[in-house]
Structures are given as C-alpha cells and as structure tokens.
Length: 294
Image 1: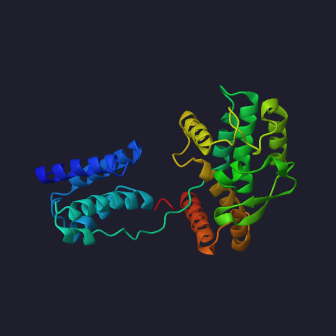
Image 2: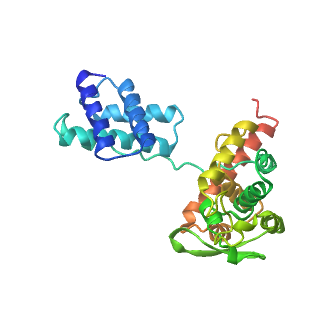
Image 3: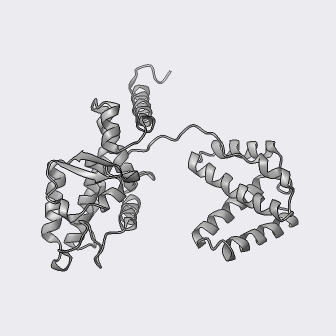
C-alpha cells in the first residue's frame, strides 16, 4: 500500500463515518474490502482493467459467493469514485471497475435431519412459551415456505389458521399457502402458553416485551444452534424456505405451482431450484455408481 493510497484511504473512511454516517459494521466491511484489495494489487494508485479482472478471478478461485464479490467490488468502486471527484487519483480508473457477471448462486437448502436438529434444539434456557413460539415459526418457514418477514407479519386475527393461510408477500402481493396439521398444532400450543399480558397483541408472534417479534431474534437462535449442533454454515432461517421448495421439487411438484407457493414474481427464480435438485442427483450418482472411483 503506497503512502498516497494510505492518505486517501484514511480520508475516505473519515468521509464515510462523519459525512455519510454509515454504521460501524458497514464501515468495517468497507475497510476490510479495501485492505484486501490493496494487499492483492501492486498498482492501487492507478489500477488498470487487467488488475480488476485478476482480482475478480482471484476472489472466484477463493470460493467467494457472487454477492460477496459484488459487495467487494462495490466498496472498491465507492473508494475510487471518492478519490476521483477530489482529484486524489486518476478519474479514468473509475470506469474500469465493473460489477462481475458471475453465474447466479444456487439456493442453499438443508437436510431433513438438520431441520429436525434445529427444531429439537430449541428450548434450552428459554421459557415454555418462547420455545413453543420459536418452533412454530421454524415450522412455518419449513412446512409452508414462508419468508421470516412473512411469518412474523401474521396477524392474530387470522387464527385459527385452518388448512390455508393468506400471506402478504413482497410487493404487497397475496398468496395462499397450505398449513400442515403439525404447524397448526404448534401454533395452538404456543397460543395456549402465551402469557395473559400478550393475549391482545396485534401480531401472532410477540417478543418478550410485547410487540411484533424481531427477525433478529430468530436469526440469532438459529445461529447459536448452528454452532452448537455443528450444522452447515448456510443453515439460516431462509434455508428452511429453500428446503421447502427443494422437497416439493423432489416430490414431483411442478414449477408453476412451486412458484405460486413461494410467491416468486418470476419463474426463472423458481427454476434455480431445478439446478439444486440436479446437482444433488449428480452427487448421488457419483457416490453410488460402481465405476465412480475410476
């Protein structure tokens, strides 16, 4: 890292912090992205198109996801835009940075055993009603394919849920999802245990102090269980929704029906799950074929 780059780097961080007022976490991410870039390239003062191409190739080889690479390049672009406008670095460099067009990442599902481990792992150190609440939410995401925001937006007036539940998804679009008996039973158990002071709350799932439950609570619970149970890194709330779609596809569900159940506006989004299913079949074939070791 050259002295000139260091000075601009410091000015950029100060600008982000004091003028743009970005959060500490975002600031740290920007800082890490630029440090990694400066450690890779020997030409940070006036990088060429080839430098960025090499860096993108390097990130791909290291197994970075599409979203991760896009974020890193966005950080670099932000830095050089700042430097260019203030004539700290050459303005011609700015146009050389392009967001990489990489193959779209596939949805990451988790196995039935991992889902069972998550659900059975809930409860330690939590009250009975909170544990019942968390299990019901996980079952809604896994058994009905809901996004976490959709599950936490269910109004108590919609109970009892019955065999179908109308959900308001992205863009305010409505869709109906089937509710399995095990989901209904889990919600009934949660409501039976819900403390009296929360009985009149508007939303079905409430926090310890009342009000709609924060998604961060569920995210933190799954994160802690993932570490405790040694589950895959991609075991997140959204992976339960992916598991729902993958199970439907494996069971012979057609794409249009799965699209409707998931609330995808585009069929191409749903089609990504066919790649997941095919990749799974390829892995099974590779591991089981008698000539796979040749």
